[in-house]
Image: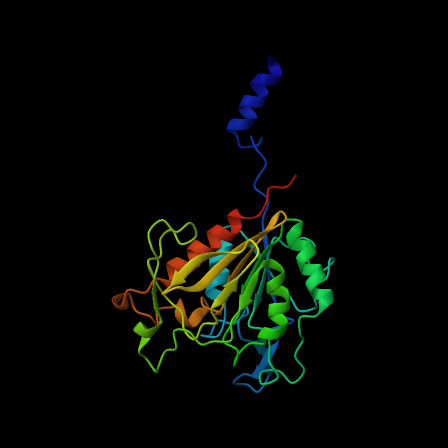
Length: 266
């Protein structure tokens, strides 16, 4: 009886936690296949383009903040993906692999990387592939990986936007979409559409074109889009509310959906 009384007092005082806190999820952004640099205003060379740290239009700092607001931990992988380097990662994001136009000596996705990544997904990893049109992303090697999951990035240029005619990149999301629960009008431009096989299925289409796809693989899942999409340039207000675009909501929707796909630890 005395123990129960002390336990109640301790619980009220906040000394006993009734249930274990949810384990923090780790989101790793690839900086090996996407490995670009520029000189800043002071002349110092710095990494940029689709990184968590890049707060300019070219970065993913806003998306990173959304992940953190949802309780996730961020990290970047500057070395090649291996069984060891992916250990502890729950969500692995590969975006816009470099071409020789962007990087003098690009790191291509090779067979050893494909084995490491597919093994990791099979065990429960959540893989995100955000490509680009073929002029701006190295699609052949990316497709070697994507096709393991029944996804192929086409060599096309869908929703080509001229100058500031942003409405050319508008895509409507139907109510009831299992991923995009709040976003109803999103903006993407110059997309590599997707061709699906195996058990991959569309998650967002437009005029018969597959824009977003998902594929179950073992205990894990793959999410693919042929566009870097939710980087800062299109989530920070350049697309004004008067245009009706909701990329900010889409970024939140994607983030929450991805986190929910992480299998519970057995």
